[in-house]
Amino acid sequence: MLVQSKMATSMERLRVLRGLIRELRHVHKKGPVKETIAYNYLMEQYRKHQVTDQRVCRAHQELQRNAETYLCLLTSTRLQQALHDEYYGKGEKTTEETAKMLGFELPQNPPDK
Image (cartoon, rainbow, N blue to C red; front, side):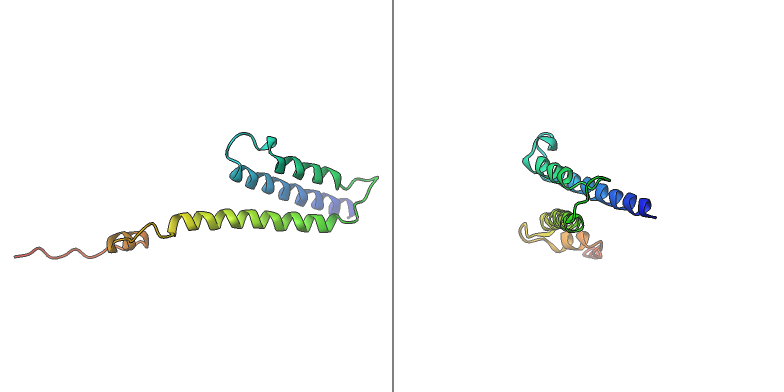
């Protein structure tokens, strides 16, 4: 049971680490993410607080919670920026543009006689 718990914890840590790296790639679009200060710091902290058979990190759960919170922050910020870019006022929209954006179609005017 203890081995299974350790494996689940390490799988969860790996999932969060991969998510953080994915979000860093979204933020740093220029060049490889491995050359950024944020990536180097992240990897350093993950290695420093790694739990092994010989060493147990007492603050492991706190660090894991902080990593999960930071991942949530990065993801939410990216998604909020995408929504802002799509819907924030780029000037006044016509009625037709607004209807199309919402998935509606305006009725056609009858031809004049």
